[in-house]
Amino acid sequence: MTTFVLLGLMTLVILVLAALVIYLADRFNILEREAHDLMRKLQDAQARPTGPYAGLSGKALWDAVTGLATGSLDELTLDGVRKRYRLLLADHINWVFNEGVGDAAKAYDAVPTNVRTLRTPKAQVESWLPPEAVAEIYRCGQGYAVGDPDTLPGLAQRLDQVCNQLHVQCSLEPGQPASQLLMPPQPTAQGAGGATPNADALQITAGAVNSPVAAAKSVSSPGE
Image (spheres, rainbow, N blue to C red):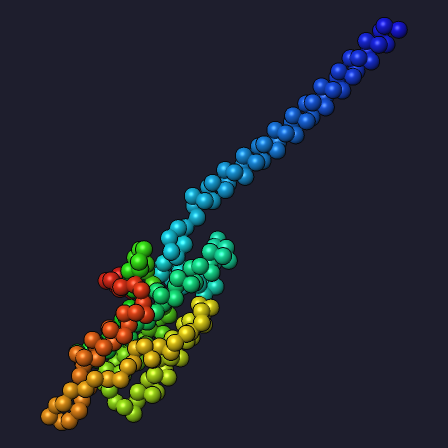
């Protein structure tokens, strides 16, 4: 009788120990998985791009805001990047247009690079625009500097069309037409042949109109 009792107790102890071992092993596996998850989150946080444009610049930034290649950016981060990109896009457009105005005044003709390093309130960011859009904006600036009243409506339409297209590509509302901001009524100067556009005044006027639109100030271009 005593032997059966001892065997029963030993069996019970073994079962209890086995259950305890299984429980501890399960808890260890859970803790190990939680530790791995925590380490992965920390690594992701360290690797996650920072800055106003999530660490992106140039063609990579354009591809992200246009949805061509968003990489590891989640939709919330990408939406914030797009909202801040509006000012960068406006500044790049303004700069290209004014290059056209200035070059026309100097009888110089050279479409600028489609890459431009711009200064934002927080950092310097490289901006990239499609070359064909840059060429069209530049030509509109040149045409505006010429000051032919007959061509101005057509130039305004071309400028608005290309700028609206850029905004649509970036999933941004176009907002105020670019021609209203970049093509104000031209000041004129009386010369020997009558009233002609004053090229120097055109550059000053264009710069003054642009200043409240883009919150960034452009700096030197890195070239193509």
